[in-house]
Image (cartoon, rainbow, N blue to C red; front, side, top):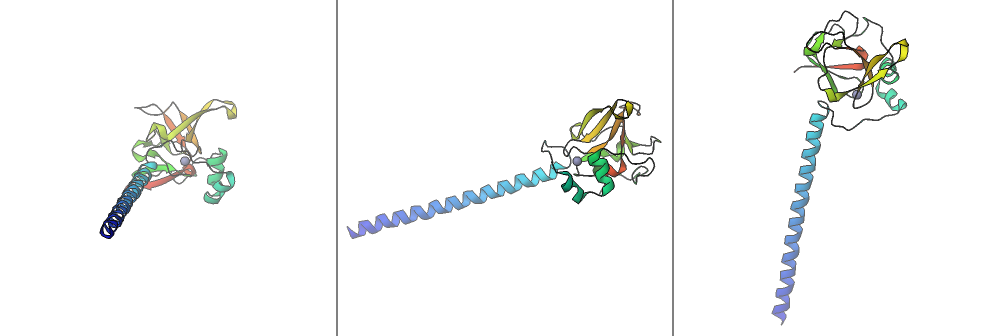
Length: 181
Ligand SMILES: [Zn+2]
């Protein structure tokens, strides 16, 4: 009888230990897969818009943007022609959103429009920008916005070079240049 009780208790202990071990293994696996997915999400997030919008209040944007960048990106301002740092930039790289870092334009698609603003004939990924009709200044123009943070970037016109015939006229201050490695 005594031996039987010891045997049963022993079996319960063994089952308990192995269940705990399985549970531990599962949770390790789970945390490993969570880490892997958040890593890969981070890696692609600046390249192609993944649908997750960034929303901040004006006071939050003011903390991370210069007054000029805030005025252009968040209040739809326009920098004076020929004053932007990136207008004549000819280095290879990517032009990202000055507010959230989403990749917008490639140096390969930049051209000299002689307008005094950085100009591109296409977007790096169409889903990375949004377009809206802008009827201010007495004419109808197409406003270009960052798809992720809704910041104002500039306008797009249909007098650009081939192959697209488009001219994305973008404020230098609205962009952050990321040199190619
Ligand atoms: Zn943005």
